Image (cartoon, rainbow over all chains, first blue to last red; front, side, top):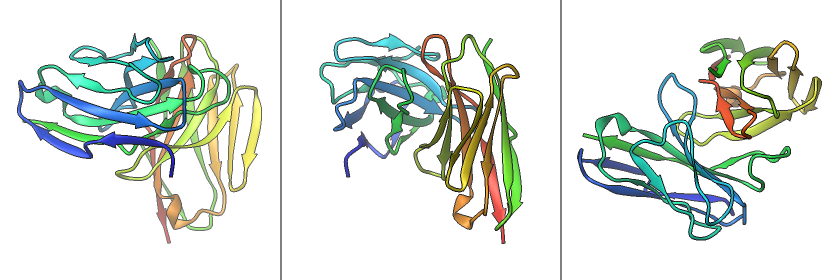
Length: 115
Length: 109
């Protein structure tokens, strides 16, 4: 079915290495988001993009970068991974940039462990 | 700062009714969302409130009081498949979602 695809599903990464988490949506949504989810904490916004060509910083952007070259793809890059970046990462999208009653739709997540 | 509070865990019996509360203090308010998240899966949208009052969707209802910074999710005729975490999220003045840590709901036969 249509929706959001994230890859990889899970990954173990050595500290200091770089990695790109991929996110692709086929719903033609304007806005896309990256969250991390840690035990006992709510979803925290890392970066977002309200439309292709634009990006913005969320609550916890340090150590992460994003790009939005087209409507469908929104990759998240860890330039030099640290153990505190061990988390479950969710990509989400919505038709509008956070307005109206349109909810965000989520991918299945990437479980990332930094050793 | 911005804060969303929900109980960490609740237990209920199959067939019963449960109410999950959410209180919030945010910089601005542009709507409140409830999501369901089964263990190891993605959050899925349940309901949206922007005006005071009750929104009903089948077995699920959500209530909002903006003056009190309060919402609840009401689940009726509980089924075992309702065992999940329920996430409350408020859209703030920047139109970003601020998320609570979620309430883990355990359903017992």
